[in-house]
Image (tube, rainbow, N blue to C red; front, side, top):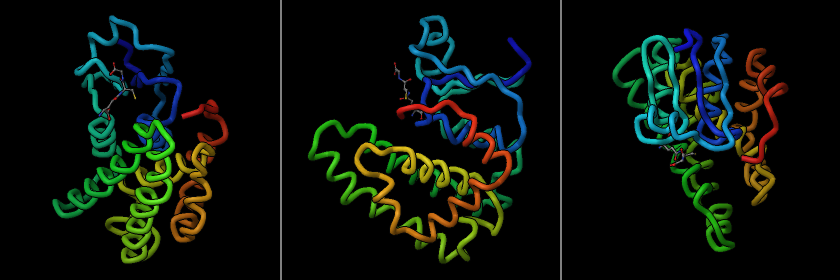
Length: 200
Ligand SMILES: N[C@@H](CCC(=O)N[C@@H](CS)C(=O)NCC(=O)O)C(=O)O
């Protein structure tokens, strides 16, 4: 196995982009393998036949949130206390409650429900939590996995012209300023400019 960490995913942001943001932010050189389909031998090596799948010299790991948490521990983005870790986990898992109905929406009714109900409901709550925490960071007054996870979700909204997601996000001005601050961190800005343009 290569000593260089390797992330296997599709040629998409979706469930892998938070992992990429963490690695880029921390200056980790990694193989960003973007697959058209998952080869049978790779599928067999993964834990559940799925990607994202991550390998480094210590671990082979599936499940996007587990990979993010592992890298957050290594790179100082996890909470310092049990309470901080629990709160970070809460925000990280909440992002999945937004992605999952978006990925599954396959007709006009489910797209409308996502755009008019699910997305505004979660964005409202994310913004309230951010405001209550002082407006800069979700947990602990410093950059954590929670911030990168919510940032990646907001980034996803910015890119998805399908279902008017940028317009859904626009009224959430505190979230937008949070997004812009993290987007201007040099390592993140560089990734935003140089990453492949993908539909999802
Ligand atoms: N809960 C998993 C979901 C992973 C998942 O559904 N991956 C899809 C691609 S987005 C996949 O590998 N599908 C191929 C398959 O299940 O055969 C995670 O967050 O990593």
